[in-house]
Length: 154
Image (cartoon, rainbow, N blue to C red):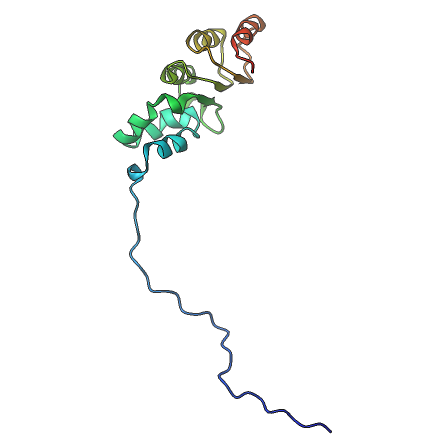
């Protein structure tokens, strides 16, 4: 038989997690403290419907930022899950185009595009690089052809 080795007689290992750190005061942030360019970057990622319908109504600071043409270089008029009847999408799209001040380069329009709206866009924005129309049944082939000649190709 072999010799028995002595066992360590230290504290038994605990299986309970260590106590949580003491509660600290909840820190609140003022979103207006973000730098202008950071807020522009965040808001420019929203759909035009969300900016015009909600974001610009948060406060005067955000309203001023929502008027910045940088936000309107890309206009996403896709409807997602919004209620078609809740907004005048044609009017909102024209408003977004106007806010771009001619700097619009990328636009997505879903369901709500007409020949008249396409003419409005191309008359005001000469540097469009991408136009995406989704389920736009009220646009004629002739108007689409005219618009395609206005799109800048790189």
